[in-house]
Length: 359
Image 1: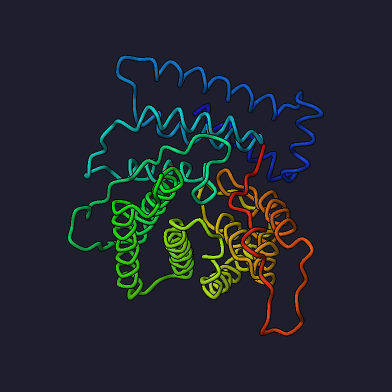
Image 2: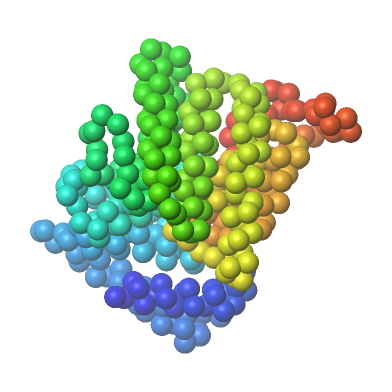
């Protein structure tokens, strides 16, 4: 209850003032009634959760929810490292626990939320100045079948999170490998590629049903994440960034999917949105730094500035600035030839392999 009250107070302040104004006012004056209310309940919640964790039989459901909420609370205050600290501590408590395949709706919700927040520690496969995340894989009722199938969009969503996480873990493994072309790595890469293809087939069957507008947008976003995971999986075993150039057409098609969704969200909401889901921002950031076509990557940056401002540990404006810095570095002393058939791409030696966002 204390965590929810603190979260509500922070969210009310941000909604009324806007994030930048709220952050400035908090730094200047922490004596406001709503600020004090939020701090009191935040501190009280922290005390109670410490008592729960240290008990002989810690309540896992409480820890799951508290882990997610404390992560969001810290990020709402603008402290990414504190948010990551809460998340990794909570994940460490849970990672050795086996979740029943008959888990109820609450457990599936809690696990999928943690999975989403866990993925948010990484910028598509690379740590945000912290150790690589513990990824919490959520079991599904149909796990173990010869071919995947989804009873509803929620199952497709959880499977999408899990696959994204498995790809990120694989990418990290490849980065640390002595030989990225070793047979065991090639086999795992092929296995993940098959799983991504199977997910696509299962979703195609699911969308044969009548979908609402919201459900159709959700499926479209999941398809974008699936495609980006597949591109990253395909390219990660080579050291050359020019490998991504073969996916330029795919990057452009992904922006074609995302742009109307962003437009619809912003028209519908009339205000900045905060979400615990990884939806749009990481996809646009990834396209901006990995697609070296000058027009397409700038289109991704423009969409970042139109997208919902906050998603989990992501800030769209922050991501746009980082992407612009990467573009400026890679395209230094370059120019675009007016002939549309001849676009100059940065040479391999100018391309960044890693882009980090410091707090």
